[in-house]
Image (cartoon, rainbow, N blue to C red):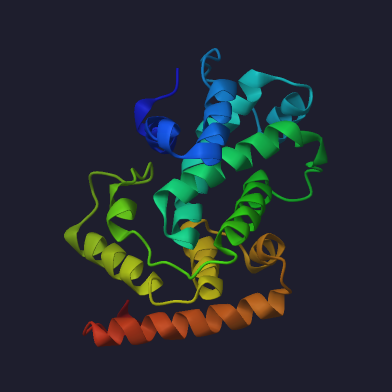
Length: 226
């Protein structure tokens, strides 16, 4: 059984099945595929789980879903700025992973492979529409497994400023900051995810950081001490 705190996006998606048409049908398909599978504390590597998924092992895809669904949801939400769309992207990513697991060759980390899929789907979702503002309230409500009781008020304020600063960036710059700082990806991994040369990623990083520094200065904070 999935842990409720870890399945918020799909729980929300389930409540919207009756009113979201074809997108809801895709979410429901994912839920039927991933729910009802035997629980496990299996600590198998991503590579071994992907090999099992390629052989049709539903327990393996469930474990990967538990590991990465929140990461994918947060990443997608920051890109598309809409919770329902982010839920659809999570659904589509794991359905693709289930159907095309054999295409994973292990040359990159699985998280990089998964985020590349998520990024492509987010770009497709945003194509043809005006970029919408990020749902900051929704981002604050997403549980973060890395959070601890030792988080200070200063750290919370810093996080809030970062979230606010991200909304000031273009989608191309926002995704770079998100991948590097929130997902701890290297320049080479980011390049693989966004499909751009490392030099281009470095350039976008430079201008994104410059824009964030301007935001911090406007908030009365010295970026050099950040």
